[in-house]
Image (cartoon, rainbow, N blue to C red; front, side, top):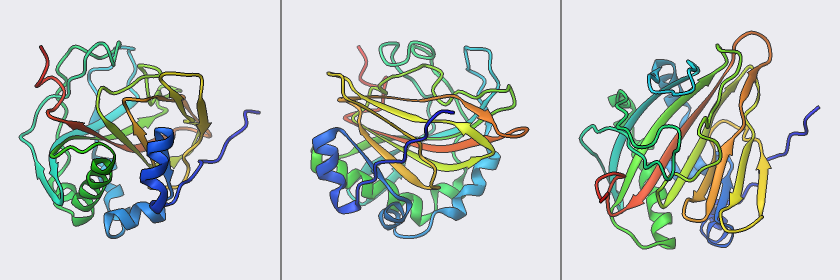
Length: 244
């Protein structure tokens, strides 16, 4: 039997100092709701409407997603024109170097006050650590399922995303085992492993300092899935816009 380690929660009041000291922090769902200014469970149904990821280079069919971009300036959240997701091969050896077009996040989610509140409040806290306005934010809704027998949340392996900060929300775990989160100090041996299990619990990472991955998931019975929301915050420009 593989041991399961509980998430090392910080409080909302400790988010900024813990992120500054360790390069990572984990928030329980109650504090995430405080950040958003209200409940988030009503957004969960939109994960049932994600579309297959046609770009998986490992031959799998286990990932569905949507992707949209935003510019966050203080309390102001503006959706950017729809664009491709692009990463350098330096950060994603499996899927980097190509423009990947995904369907956008549905308008009802983007228009929800909890959505904009969440993006703005995270941006304000990141600005306390690394002054930057505006933030260029990419939002990814993911569903990893076990229809292939196994699902890989991070098929590229342990990685950085090429941004300033990363927020990973566990939205739901249904009928699965696995999906352990692993975070490592990019400049040393320090690391930690734990499993996010509480819906809307949140892992925050300083992407300039930390490497992260999630282990594969397997079904407990027939088919299961793991839903996440990933937000990346980058100063100056979206990835690819300042290349060269």
